[in-house]
Image 1: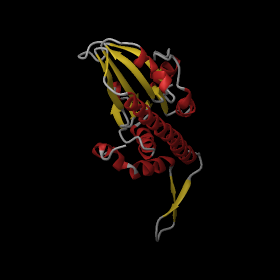
Image 2: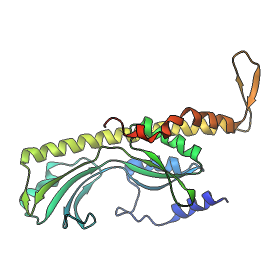
Image 3: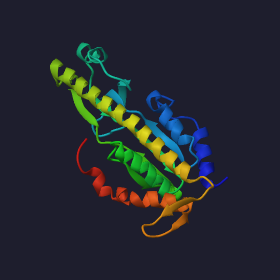
Length: 242
């Protein structure tokens, strides 16, 4: 068992320390797809959520109290408490899109995963070199929505505007779910292509004007990665908006 396999075993056998304590249903099959592959494993994930929280201290981001959280659509009934109850301090409305962190065996494996993320609409994704040269792909987008609803117990927005905020958040959540589904399809396709290329038999390739010659599995994987070299130009990841 190599070091990567040891890290994977430790990670997947450890306790889920998230508030929810389990993988979100929307991304369960995606996470299983990744963790069943010997070259990848997930280290953290969230399918995307809409949340309302009380911010007790404006200068300390961690000094917050959760008032409402959902991974599904939010309704007017869900925010009725804001109209019926005076809440001291500030109340913040936030939509957080899908986020996924995956440790990869090598940089080539990371590049293939990054390709699937970028082509699925997660244009804020990238590769991070962690401690002990761990290759981590962070799958992210720029769909975040955050705005204050109350300040010192006073509602800052009208009922109509609050209704509009819910609509926008639900639309973002729907687009987020579509991208997740696309990502799973694209990643599955890429992994199948790599798995197919790793079969013991040799593959053959004909250069123009030349005879057939054998190509090893490693050469096939290298060719796939070389074709995606432009994906590592991180300045391109932030061009355009979601």
